[in-house]
Amino acid sequence: MNFTPKQRFQENKQYTEAHRELVVSDRFRAAAESALLHLVMDLSDCSDPATAAANWHRIEGARSYVRSIINLGEVGKALPEPPPQNLNHRT
Image (tube, rainbow, N blue to C red; front, side, top):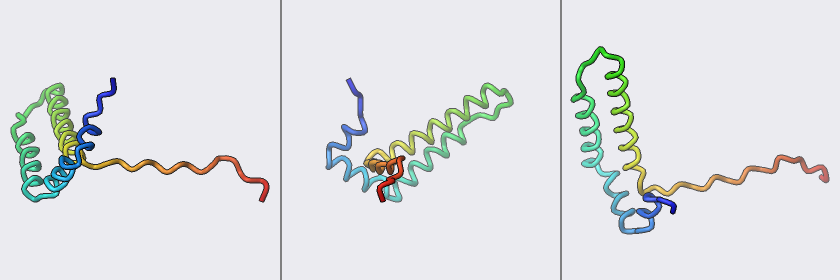
């Protein structure tokens, strides 16, 4: 079984159109940026390397989530086919 939630989401055209309108709105951007900043500001000061590393991973996870939700409605473009590696000696 292939679990492809992004592809399944993109199959519903109404969802993707509404999502695209949402993520370009200033309200959504302000909310996403505020939530990320709130998460960072709520992290406690620490001098323990393990806690500092855990906090860094929390921030990276949140950044990854924000990127993922913003790009959920975007369909990736297929990569162009690479040119042949062999030279044409007939011309």
